Amino acid sequence: MSSIILVLNGPNLNMLGLREPTVYGHETLADVEQMCQRSGQAHGFTVECQQTNHEGQMIDWIHQARGRVAGIVINPGAWTHTSVALHDALAASEVPTLEVHISNVHKREAFRHHSYISLIAVGVIAGFGTHGYKLALDHFAKLLK
Ligand code: CA2
Image 1: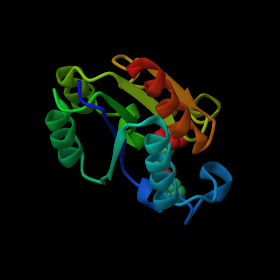
Image 2: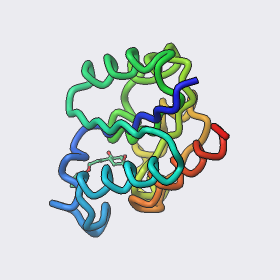
Image 3: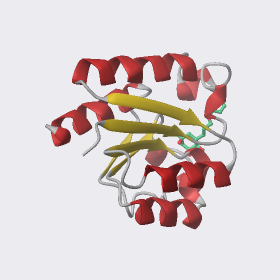
Image 4: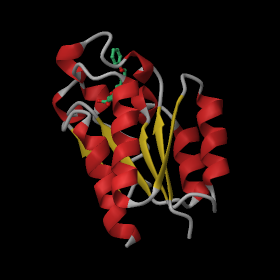
């Protein structure tokens, strides 16, 4: 099996660190992606990072991951709560997927409590800030050994 882990970020996450620091912290998306690359190097696998504000683009990347990558770490942003299409793409990819949320979605508005992605995810990490991405990669490091 390949030793590539795909780290995917959905809509508005390109704004990380630039707005709403009380909810999402001060780190930028570039900081998060650099931290993920370093974590991959430490664990001996390749990390590929992508962010998009376009749902079709995200679905294309997920389709292309099938049979190519060993795992997906995804923060689907607001698509978490709305997108059956993203759920179906991840299910069809058959790639083990970890769902990450920077904030604790369960102590926020009710519309953030439901996730279409959790139905297919191996696990969910929420409320650990951007450290959640590292926790997800550490988990894949253990799974891939
Ligand atoms: O807590 C998370 O990581 C979320 O996935 C973030 C989404 C939100 O819709 C989910 O309910 C929970 C929002 C991402 C928007 O990120 C921003 C970051 C900085 C400034 C503005 C938006």
